[in-house]
Length: 362
Picture (cartoon, rainbow, N blue to C red):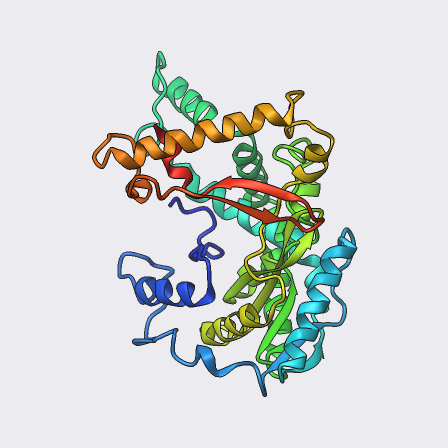
């Protein structure tokens, strides 16, 4: 992990359930003397304790003035339904105001690049990072940083360096820090009336890889609901709450600083209340299968099923060789136990998947 923006960076586990997240958090939390941004004095905490208490009596905050520009109606409907589900389970829904939330994206993309330009200065080819072949020291600096950083990283370094430059510090970085304080104060007032705040994780479902590469501003706007947590120093979690066009929708749960237990309690309760548990997206394969073609190809479905059967056979071979190099341990299963399973997508139809894809390393 590389430091990007030290006052904003935070890590968190990807897990299948809230309980798994609590178990991992038990292992990774606590003060790290080698990390200057690590909090002190929190003591030993068991994040699995009280997870089964449910949401009865908890106060759930809903943002009254939530920015909805670019918000997918299907995402809004799924989040609203999740809130109603928790309300029916005994939670009290209250409205809160975050008047400065609309400035979060602009604030973040001044502070984060400014800190990144400082943190990434160390990658000069001498102390850290890639060292390019060059004829001299200055040429080596330029080549190492030009070749070692991607376009988005370079863009942020340039923005950050400009924001910190003489004559612009007060106009940009200082004002961004002042706005950050206002955003933090908004959340402090909101949590005085509620235990957690719920909102969408992103305004839309996942966009295609590279789709917004030519328009970074549009890509930045997808962070509008998540970056206030970094600016205000809040814990948060995202849990699936439905599907739109076959892609998952995220429900974001925020709580006051060091109150991860409330987040995990709500997430755990919602996992047992949601009606689509363990449903998986089918990525739009159904329509192409109905038309008789394998997804993304002109080949017939019959050819695709032959490929599927071949992969199953390769999986069986991997299971029979207990010590075969390149076969992940999770694919070592007794011969004959490999299975085929189906799943139903959001719009109906059937998709197919291998029970254990790690065997595809063969």
